[in-house]
Length: 193
Image 1 (cartoon, rainbow, N blue to C red):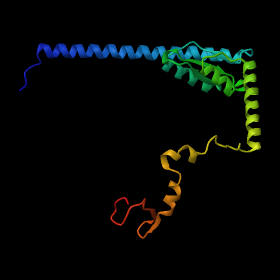
Image 2: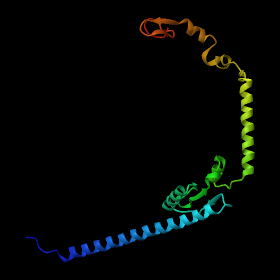
Image 3: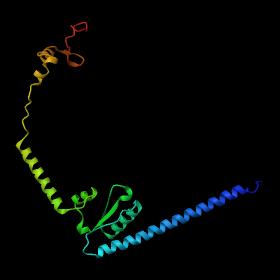
Image 4: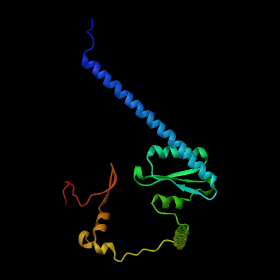
């Protein structure tokens, strides 16, 4: 027969129940905050859709969970959204109406933390086209003939000697096992002659 639980066991169980109750209360509060945040974002997105003068909207920086909720709301509303920023807590969301979706250049400028300037983008595009045109013209002209300033044989003659290549070619002998191979001046004994 087991003895009744001691006072210490009852105290431990009571503390565990209290902790579980606090945890459950925190989880309920967090869930309620998420629901309220979602409702607030749905209202802001709805107001954005109703305003015909706005084509994009930038939200304040928010954490990962809030950004995911906002992306979900935007997707359900049929809009386009992107997150920008470096640090996890400094990232923000921009939403765009589908008919005014951003170009790749615009997205790149936001990713680099810059404001989008259509005039600068047009200048960059023209410079890019000019560079591409110059590359095409260079390709049509054919490869440039490269002529070295010096002959490598003369440059390295002090290391390999003047007739080294010819001597090596003359010593090329057939090897039954491996095909052709150079003997490099080895005699019949295998020592250098």
